Image (cartoon, helix red, strand yellow):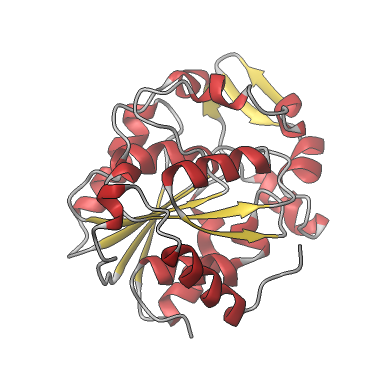
Length: 259
């Protein structure tokens, strides 16, 4: 799929909204205008992975903050996002990449959150076993590259470069590999207790070349939540390889015009 331009992006957003795909509770609400954006990183990363997107959001006049996800347990990860959300003054767009879609789904119930954005992210329902859901789709290649040192997990260098950051220059991907934060095994056992996407406007960026989460699983989750969806020809790290498209989706979720 070719890279989308801004006009195509705007038309796609309008068409999806017109198709009336949002869940009933979300359809009834107009996306509030927000000045704040809080972003959460997933596995094999840290908050700096949002740097390219943050620069674009700041240029658009938005206040952007990246959460440093502890990657320990789901409750502790959710709490880290909630602390940042509590510091925001007014409506806030909550954005999650990869695993942190779990956090967005749970922490998105915070009263400051006006809309949710999922970037190649998990999007479970309340109490859902995400692992069981993922097994109903072909297993992505990156799964075989996870290695554990006791209770700490990380992605091997080969899998990181090939299956996680496959569309980035190798030198850049190696820098990102060097700073990946290990996750605790217990993190993977967590389940959400509520699903914010059932009551709040949601947006989703599917990575069509994703080798970390199956793209068809991403499409399934986006369709199920009735998200306003774009598809980006990108690896799992679309937020780094295609920051403009991701920033524009976030700007739309903030109720701001896409220029």
